[in-house]
Length: 117
Image (tube, rainbow, N blue to C red):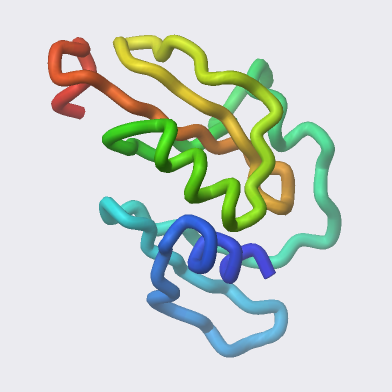
């Protein structure tokens, strides 16, 4: 179940489960973002294509990418790209959840234009 992955791998907290089939669940990630997760009939191969219109990835801010990457790798996350420069300063590292949704770690130094965000 996708919600379990966000809890176990990203340290989220299940904050609501409607108790129905199919379930609707809310998971709060560290930092306060709450995701609504519910089952789907299919998985689209397009969900992780970053160049399509609409929201295509979630940015997860970390203090340091390398230790965050190592921690996620220990939990089974596979990284297929290298660390890259981030728009607005800093560095990013992309990865996918079990349904192919695109996420990335972002590290911003204190002098980066987007650091306070």
